[in-house]
Image (cartoon, rainbow, N blue to C red; front, side, top):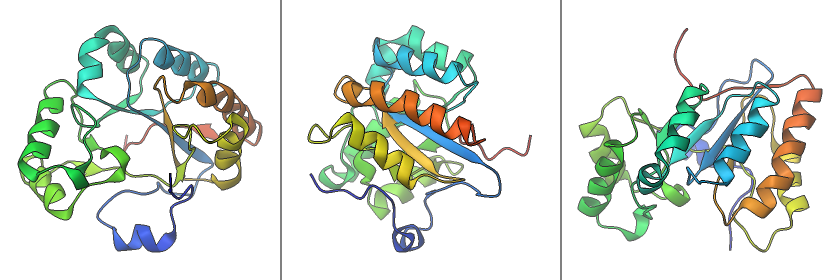
Length: 211
């Protein structure tokens, strides 16, 4: 499995129509969690965030929202942001545009958000344009740092190190509230929260509101 833990500057410039990081003028880390809600993992994440009064962004799969409506509602009730992550976790590079668009729109029925994160970070320009045509306010949210918690070849310690060594003010960090990632997530997340909190960072949800 090949992927970049830290998004290079040239990538963020080449695909500048997407959001890769947030402003870095304050000591804020933007944690995000993909693939939930999950009946066991997401409550763990929410409990850990609450210990630090931390807010985060959850990019949800539509079918998982339908399977775990109470947990999805808890995410909202506790003041976090949600985003569309397709209905069935589709890979845009391997999916016809019409099928991909229909899947995004199906998820939109269950996830009220102007944020979208393509699974695997894979979306074609034409897919993005078609989504934007139907929902002009939609923002595609990518990331600055991948924890790698989805990678079964990584140890929990390596996953944690990926975040600690590469995150800084304004970083959008990706974890996964999924069963596959849980072994690494449950080790890394508490350490990441404590480490950056001790350094004076706060944790906020992705937002472009002026409020």
